[in-house]
Image 1: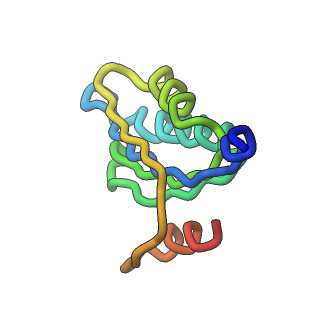
Image 2 (image 1 turned 180 degrees about the vertical axis):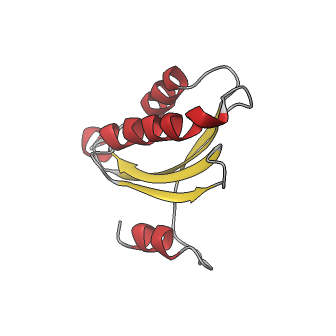
Image 3 (image 1 turned 45 degrees about the vertical axis):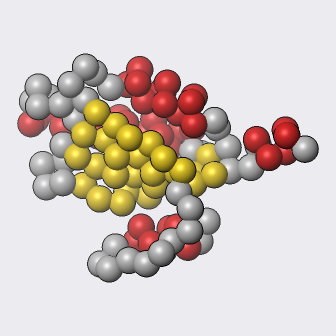
Length: 109
């Protein structure tokens, strides 16, 4: 019973804020690298939820069967001292306003 439950994909949300020490001309490259990292362990099941205008702060929805502690460790290795992130499992969608792409992604998974 335990092993089948552990292999079920779960939906997660990651909020990532790059540190103030990251030069503006490197923000896009860093965000793309982090998105690719998440995409690799989520097998492409990633949806951008939001991005600040300068790309310093992004939110990603993703689906994976990987343990949340493994995800945390991978993000920890890919971020620097000034970066911050939060990861949480996503439950039911309660509603949305103006976030159609992210809401649709959640509804279909």
